[in-house]
Structure formats: C-alpha cells, structure tokens
Length: 265
Ligand SMILES: [Zn+2]
Image (cartoon, rainbow, N blue to C red; front, side):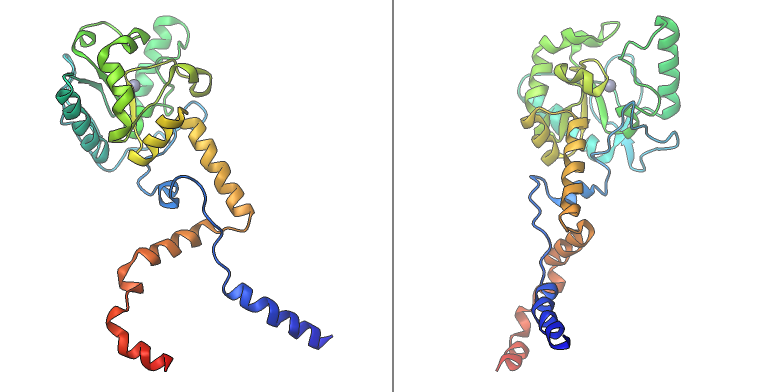
C-alpha cells in the first residue's frame, strides 16, 4: 500500500510541480480585464457608482466646447483621447464640440430630479444618480455646430455627418458609442448618438466591431473569468506570471552565460 502511494506521488508530483497556468483564450489580455485604471467600469441603473466616487486623475478638458458650456473635466486618458479624436475629425473636415464631460454625483442627482419634476416621469434620457457614465469621468457628449444651438438633444443627431464619422472612428481613439439604438432594453437608456465613453483602444475596437453594449461586454468577460477559474485557472497567478515574463530584470540572464555553462557541464 505504502509503495503504491509512493508510486502515485512520484507520478503526480512532477505534473503538479510543472503544471502550467490554464490557457487564457479570451480575445482581450488579462491585464485589460483586471483593469487597474478602471477604464471599463460599468455604471448603470443596476450597477450604481458610489455617491463619493470621484476619479483621482481629472484634468480640464482641452477641446473646443459648445456655446454656453463652462470649464469641463475629464480623466486624463479620456482627455488625451478626445483631443486626438477632435484633431482627426478636423482633418476629415468636421468640427466637433464638447457639450458635457465629467459630472459629479450631486450634479447628476439635481439633473435627474429636475427632469423628473418637469416631466413627471423618467424618460430615460437623464441617468439616475450613480448610474451616469458621466460620473466615471470617461463619458462625453459631443455635438456638431448646428446642434450646439439646439435646445435639447435627440436621436436625429445620428443623421449628421459628424455623428456618423464619430460612430465609425471613435474606437480608434478608445471611445465607444455607449448607448446604441438597438441596445436600449439592455442599457436602459435611449439611443444617444452624441454620447461616447472612453474604455481604451483595445476594448473599444472589440466592442464596436462586435456591436455590443458595455453591459453585454461586462457580462461576457465576467462569464469567461468565472469559467476560467472554474476550470482550475488562477487569474491573479496568471497576472503575476505574465508580469514576471514581461519584466526584463527577472528573466534576462544573457550576461551570465559563463555561470550558466558551469552549471550544465
Ligand atoms: Zn451623455
């Protein structure tokens, strides 16, 4: 019996010792899913942001603003991305105007209850406090000149050349069309052809090519991750392993050739 057990151990140990991390087959890298910068954070009516959540890297938005708007703020990466997008639009012959950017929880709360009072109902155009993409500091409303003079925004903006250019190119700068026309039931927000959300170029390209909402994307990667761990994968260990592989101070022993040779011979 003891011998059998030892034999089993001998068979099993090397396998265990050299077991490799489960294969990560999701189309996006684990580091993107880990999302330390919180670029893929979801906020909606079901997933509310904390009333105290304020991004810690807000900067003044440095692009052309719509008439009647004051100074606006965005997270640093989103600001860099919007500058690049506005520049590219200009080169293509379109002038874009920033209408709205970061919105504090308290501002959103005021806006929501004002609209509720005015209409007597939630019309799905102003988000519930904590549910707004604008509180992430990554959501923006962008218009063309004509629409900056209009009283409100509606889905007709989608037929403008600027809206069409943005829908086609936003992902190149890391933005997605956050509230798509055929995703209203999922996002619980009406089609907003002016509202873009920064998520980073890789995720934006994936989402726009697949034509899915941020809600569907979130569900998808969360399902994948759960399945990955269920199949024996260890997500945090995978991240550590990848970090070690990418850290040149850990693996590069090219200069230690002699020492290594002495070990082998
Ligand atoms: Zn918006």
